[in-house]
Length: 473
Ligand SMILES: [Zn+2]
Image (cartoon, rainbow, N blue to C red; front, side, top):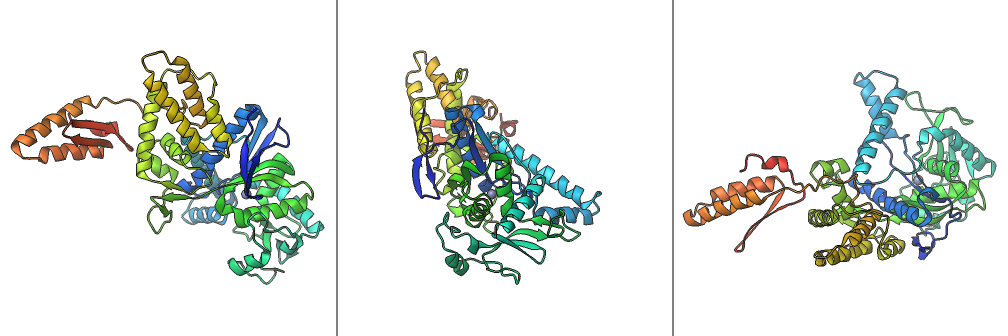
């Protein structure tokens, strides 16, 4: 059996992965807060951990992996949208409008992540369905002396857990000095964090021993992972931005509520996403959602390929150039594997690359080598090799039937002939306006126009839209 090696943030080292129970390998990944469309940075952990999920299924068997990713459907931004709608005259109770908002956002999330070829996790719990479990966990923390109630709130007492800060490698004193902590008169220590908070009539709330209120964000993951995966499980994943305080707080809650269980064995964090070398931000105007990228004409498969071309522990830079290259590669690979039979025979070098701490870039390099080999041997029958190539690409979630269709071959030969003729006329008349007009129209349709002494070459590029070619001939 393939040995998977993973980098564990907690031990800061790469080691052999041994599941607690090989019959049920358990993975938990922090999911989205469903208040709006997912931005492209949110998609990175989805693609990264989807690839891990596929690898685990390959190594341990498809029925032996449990992957839980939650929906945080309790959030002030969700409430604010619902309240706005109510004030704008929308019918229904605030509760119904909140439900409507989370339903529509979850629908968008599924559609967008499906478009990136991400498999649905085995379980997608919603926080609002586990409030009872959260209350029970908070009660246990109070009983064990790790939490205290004050003014309708319940707070976790970080001083009661000496290991607090171990995951991110900080001491509580450093955190107090460096963090923008919310100071509240009822906190014993500025680093103490909220497990429960009161809700007024305008907000969703549940009855609890501390009055009507709602849980804090961190307790959600501790309660849901415990309910669905148990007190100890194998891998906990999420974006690097969640390491502190969210994951630190999850560890404190879970380890104090279930002493000795250990919570998650391996902690995996993906690095952030940049756009053209810059941090994504609304003020820079480079902030976009997955849906916007899809609408700009980038196929989901291309977005996935670009994301997988960088190792998950390195910052990933989204560039139009990378997308263009990814699209050209995928067009080639799809043409190469058309009609091939996926018999589940996967190239071991591709598996080995992924098993080495999810070296997706290495796996893609191997696929390139396989593709080159098949192309070079195109005169002989490569039926078997093509099948292995296809199955291997599918281990990365690429070349699947679900993502097919965008690459449909288009015949640009007539337009190539036309541009060649118009260009020849222009050379003679020295009037290039006709060439410029045709070239602009082709570029507007997402066609790359390459003109050299050797001639004219037209290639469908990123954002290619065949509909826009109508009328150009
Ligand atoms: Zn979480």
